[in-house]
Image 1 (cartoon, rainbow, N blue to C red):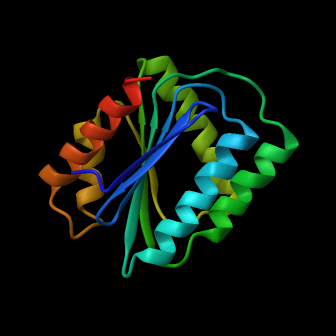
Image 2 (cartoon, one colour):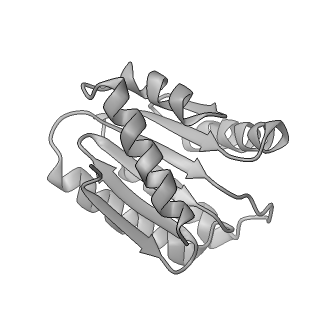
Length: 157
């Protein structure tokens, strides 16, 4: 089902299915992983027509302060996104404390980067798929299947 899956040595993975861009994290956010994600995301946007959506799976959190270089790369990734980016979901594994921490960070990113598309944080992949389906032509059950397949592939590390 997933059209592309690519693991990066720095603890992240990227993939896509139809109009869905997928990112997975299981270590701290690093400059090499962000560079890899930016390159793949730009390629995905060049090869897709029409609206796109995204999901980031935060599979493990290492609460470390982002470097200045990493923060600048995150800002650049958000500026790279064209007007056709419709929505981005975040799935957070690890319970309510992790969920609250990611919600706090996302709110800050939205304010600083003036993100023009809606961002939502979820504690289940099915809730994330349901919400993303409201912004996509891809049916909810297909989004859910792609997200769960991607999560399984990320777990095989």
